[in-house]
Image (cartoon, rainbow, N blue to C red):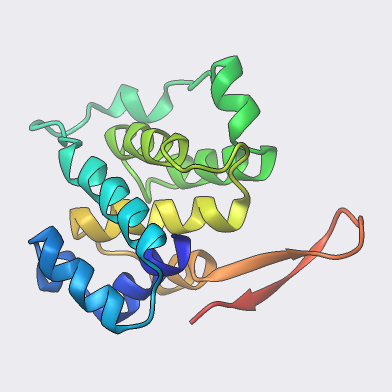
Length: 162
């Protein structure tokens, strides 16, 4: 399903260009060679993304300095690298507190029992894509790389996924 989300980002440079009708989008994804089960899962995930509503007001300055404590459930599903990356995005004001919560919601909506940093980056990318948030090229490059584990080592190399 993550491959479908990356495909949508790369194919439809912005969210408004993506077909809004689920049947039409499913047909296009099927024609692109994606499996039916993955398409169904992606459409459900995207429906949840569209269902999350942004706050109408601009976040107050104090909200950017607030500390986000992860629940046990969130910490179990989101690895340390993902949680650290999310806090980095908050502290550098790449994302708003509202976007942070929507990113967490959509990451927890993934089927995997533990969300990897690579999957998490795609979730961040999709929330920013949906919101039409302008993203610095360096941040975009970071979001478009996939971390690869190597034989039990605690380091990885970055591979571009586009």
